[in-house]
Picture 1 (spheres, rainbow, N blue to C red):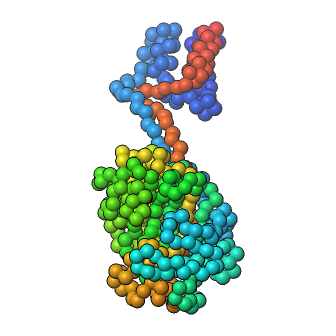
Picture 2: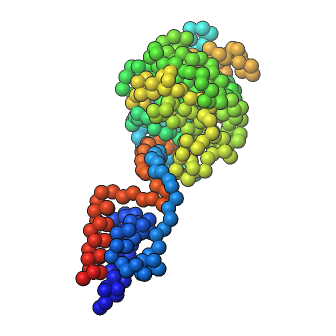
Picture 3: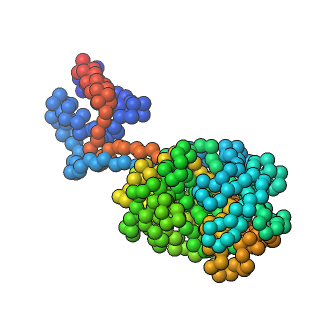
Amino acid sequence: MTRRTRLYAGLCSAYLLLTAAQGIHGLPRFEDLKEAFVDSVKSIVPRSFAGQALQRRQQSNSTNSTSETDVWILADEYSGHTFFDDWKFFTGADPTNGLVEYVLLQLNSMRTNEFDEFITSSYVDQDTAFSEGLAYVDDNNTVIMKGDNTSWVNIGDTRKSVRIESNKYWNGGLFLLDLNRAPWGCAVWPAFWTLGALATWPTAGEIDILEGVHDNIHNHVAWHTNPGCVLTETGNYTGTVDQTDCNANINDNSGCGISDWSRVSYGESFDAQGGGVYAMLWDETGIAIWYFYRVSIPQDIQDGDPKPKTWSMPSASLAPEGCDPFQYFANHSIVFDITFCGDWAGNSYATTPGCPGTCAERLQDPANFINASWSINSLKIYTKESLQGTVVSAGHATSSPHSSMLLTAVVGLLMLLALC
């Protein structure tokens, strides 16, 4: 075999082995390494051959850059017939309303402090909720939770309802609730919210994601914390600020809040257009809330690959500049409930247009509560993973030290074989 033949054979073998090694070891593409390879072998190749067969590729100037991408990984899903498997049914005193004591299947004639209304809710246990049709999963795998809408009650008596709390708790994440209906109506006070599960309220904070009373049409987002957390009016949300001090120990425990601008974010109009998705993002950038009505749900949510950075401006947002999202909020469980009257709905009833009589009188007729129900498709919680890598231009390539060592060894061996 002549020297030139051996060289051709060595170069061909090098190309084939490098191509195979690329797939096995994740090496840079052979084409991107041709310049270095050509420089290495030019000195041993006859001048006439080098000028004809191994032309040096012209490179354009470029710089490498570092890119970081957040990927949201599905950690927990509550849906279908397993929805209730990891929840507890709350039957004790309501920790979010110090003036209300909810007693299991027991009448409560405590009065509110302002409008002299009877407290008119009693949360039931799991067995009662299932047996009386207050919580179930229908044939379409839709989760239903509702207040009693079949029983007449006397003034001063309670109407049965449901409140559930997750057994699991979280420190940050992306929470996506897909629902068809949320409760509404005069005397009705529903909420989908999170609160610190391992501390006395409000030490670990509370986040009200979906909440309202009566026939309201705007969702009310709120945060309740210890002193020191402030809602900054930065303009990075579309809603209207109600209050900026999140201290839950003042202003009748109202915390800081933002009302959604959308007229279909709560109530009858929300249900009429098919509900939608409520999203809550809790990470180092703060705590933000989005509402997407049914026909505007982003495709990435529908595909199970949410990308919050690509979404429109949130309805509400608590920025870290005014409130550290991990100092004031920790170990949060998730809560769904439906309250009747109580501090907010009871105290605001007399001044609410369209709500007749008193709250206690409203509570008597079960027909008044046919809309006091949740209809839920799924609740999904995602956790964030940050991926970091180097972006390289077409004319340059980088490799790990192990890949470079392997590459050098392969090229050197083949060049020696070609010269034998």
